[in-house]
Length: 277
Ligand code: ADE
Image (cartoon, rainbow, N blue to C red; front, side, top):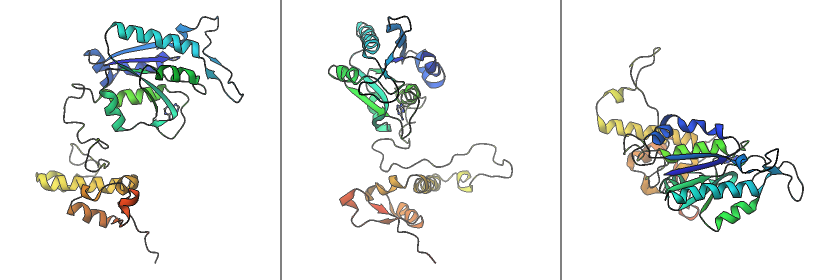
């Protein structure tokens, strides 16, 4: 897979040399090209922004440098035969970045990232490239960053670990929280390793029992407990068929009950409010 990143802060992308993404680059599974947007400015001050039409606070990134930088990255990738590119524009007003979208992007041969600073990029840039390739405007969460570079790092890491041969174990993402197609999207529970006793804290007995069935059940109960506490919205949306009898017992202990009208609004479980004494 090829990744291009066009940015005014190339050094912000230095972490792409480290760890999993760095190894994927070194092994040739990932070809990463970081481009300095200011190389496509032609004035003395290397200007990449200007005041917004219609007024308002902040500055808007100009069409000229973006158009020339993206054309240059595209020409290089086409010349080297990378196939169909997709443009990824991180923005808080994009669609939520999810594991499902990470899987979709990991199946593409070539991603070009356009992280913005200031108030964003002149809209005509996205509109122009959208006539030539798929454009994904993505948000990594409901908060506002100072620029899209950190979002590029997030998306790149989530995508790179899905590439064949990048994670040691091909099975490793089957059990990911949020793996698409999972029966139920549950958060993963706690994990432990040696030593068996640390500062007076031991390991749950069941994990030392060697009883695989009991261990699997315990892990499932932990996942249900954690999901119920941190992401009740995930439980609400689980179809009844996602849970077996033991799951239902655990859900009941956690205060959940099937919602009789659930199917109508896609919320199959509800937690009746606790009765006040
Ligand atoms: N740029 C600024 N905030 C962002 C966010 N939450 N997601 C993606 N890109 C952004």
